[in-house]
Image (cartoon, rainbow, N blue to C red; front, top):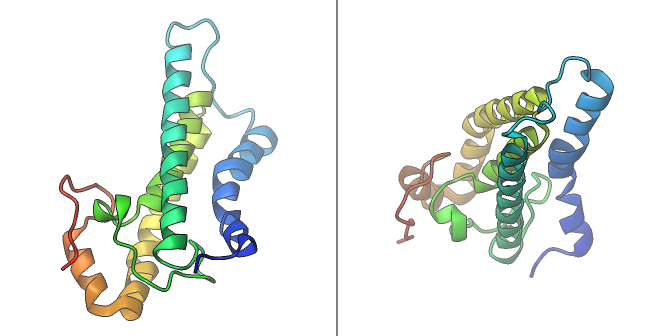
Length: 171
């Protein structure tokens, strides 16, 4: 049974904060005088913005796909207080272990390109490092406890961040 609408909506809190609220708040209220932006009239302004929008939309599409897989296949949400009941090894999870985090990283990186914002690019880098440390120290050991040998086999065959070309096949 997929999660209810309130459960689903509560799982969007963290991504909305990381992708929407935090970058805009930092840039507009805290670090505005230190941030960069694309210079007007430059020949690469619009190509950079189009590339940024494309990267953002790619991240958004990947994010929606991952959330849907967690709801349908995993019978849970992306949030730690409402985790999946089953290990999800489908779609992008057959190529890389953390496509959800990659999707948020794509969205923030897309914003950095779209806005020409060095601070947003730095936020993307900090987001990646924090999540990398979290996955190694907490998330992955927790998944081993929850899913045992099936997660160990998955972890041994599917890379954490850089996708494998051939999709992983569960035994």
